Amino acid sequence: MISRSRMKTIVLVISLTLNLLVIGGITTRIMTKEARPIPPNLAWIMDNLSEDTQAELFPQLEEFWDSSRPLRRAIFRAQRKVNELMVEEPMDRAAIAAAFEELRQASHAYQKLSHDQTIEVFELLTPPQRVAALRFLEDRRDPDRRDRERDRD
Image (cartoon, rainbow, N blue to C red):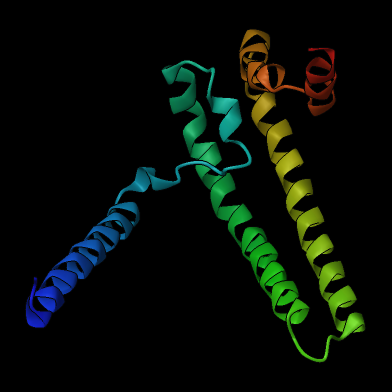
């Protein structure tokens, strides 16, 4: 049987190892510029484009990333507020409704910016590049179609 002090040592070593792994991952993400080089809402555009085209678009997308960051933060803050209010006692229906409205407004502002940025990026592409970028959307499956296919089987 393993002694209590030996068990504590093993648990301590495992905990230390996991903490170092997490800290290393966070540090790597912070230190590498490529951690989030483009806005997540526009990443799909880049998937089917050549490396040259991606390199040309990168400065514009990096600028978009910076301009969309405050809106993404607003969404996360609004979502956090909704989550906090949903578990409060007593539950305040009016406060939750107001928080959801704030979340909708933040989401709408982010979606509008995302659409505007998508238009700007597509203006920079040639027609064949636009077709290549849209392959992502074509490859996604319509959920209704997926349900129909499942029902057919």
